[in-house]
Length: 237
Ligand SMILES: Nc1ncnc2c1ncn2[C@@H]1O[C@H](COP(=O)(O)OP(=O)(O)OP(=O)(O)O)[C@@H](O)[C@H]1O
Ligand SMILES: [Mg+2]
Image (cartoon, rainbow, N blue to C red; front, top):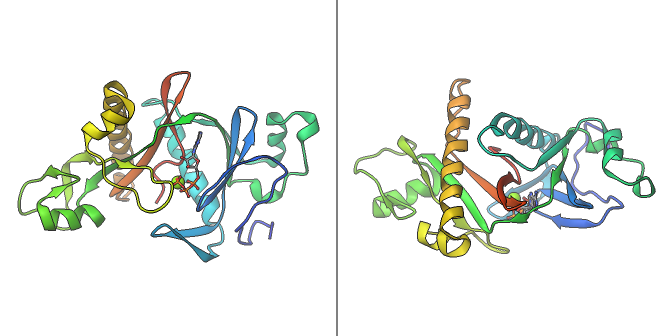
């Protein structure tokens, strides 16, 4: 199932596995990681049995695009987008090289391996999804009270930072800003909020000018040499 047109569900590279997620398989490359976005479909925390051809390639390239576009706002983990599989040789010692499968092209990236911060940094620019459900019940989103009379899917005047836990299993739970400070300290908590809002706002305006609404998003951050950097995927649907 390795040609460009077929569906990639599983990978099996002769490298140490760092993590197999719902959608991506990540391998160790010494102090770097190789993240491969498969065509697996995850919905409501469940991986479905079938895949969508080319989905992983599109997701990977959307992330690469936004990492490049937003690097002036905060450095990120991207070292190289693998468009030509032979470039992987640059990241492996001679004895660990292997025939790189062609499916890696366009759907994989080499990134810096960092200590992950255990918070999902969600930003909402529109009153949709679970934000709308909470607003209807309590007039608030993640405990932040909003003006009365807002409509479903309405654009919010100020995007909201609504962080959650990063649950190992099950569904992520909302966190207040005080809880984020308790987990990571006040300075990092404030920086997570500021950078998340700045990156979302930049992406929202960029996409809006092209006729695309980014209603909300989730970012993850890590510490590299004690500095905050953006990791994982970025502004993907
Ligand atoms: N540069 C990085 N360094 C360390 N860990 C990273 C880095 N980039 C991403 N990760 C982690 O690697 C994993 C990527 O896997 P994936 O997103 O497919 O998993 P997932 O099933 O969505 O699970 P999760 O809920 O943990 O994201 C995530 O847990 C993410 O936090
Ligand atoms: Mg993930």
